[in-house]
Length: 85
Image 1: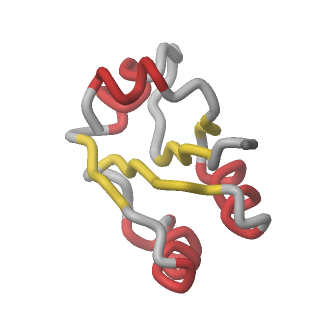
Image 2 (image 1 turned 90 degrees about the horizontal axis):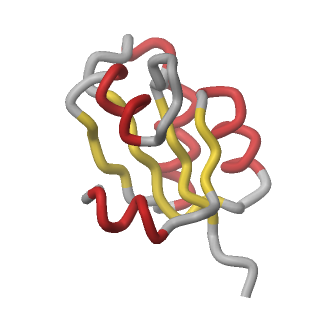
């Protein structure tokens, strides 16, 4: 996802557990996943995203993804939430 889209998207959750919760509640519009994440960690996220036809984009690394969202730690998954409108 481009930096411009990130700046305009005010509602997102960062992290594997929070992303899974949002997916189960049908609140996710799209996902961004770090390419260097171990695949066995992503099984649930990928399965839910496939079942719900959620678009997935990939980031270069966990470090880049964390910095892109202004957090001081590495991020594996970011879920962009559907607008409340």
